[in-house]
Length: 100
Image 1 (cartoon, rainbow, N blue to C red):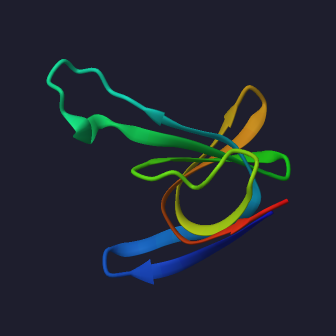
Image 2 (tube, helix red, strand yellow):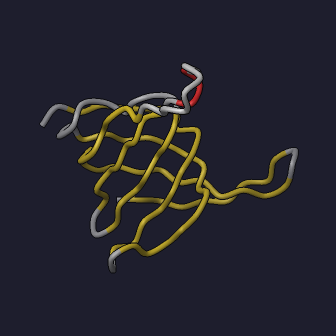
């Protein structure tokens, strides 16, 4: 389930959405650039919302795999990958985790 909205900010218009679905992927991706720099590491999160997948690549996990999560996030891009609609988001807030 997803609700999309637009809002005007200090730097122009941006779109955000409220998303709810099952967290199907959550793991930390370690970068190996040879410098030992930990700032290159990030979390890969994928949430199944209806027939779509919401992807958040960022500094925090959204929860444990299998949980139902609800959050608001800025929409970066809509795309299709292997005939599945995907939405890439950033800055998730108001995270609610629900036990099934």
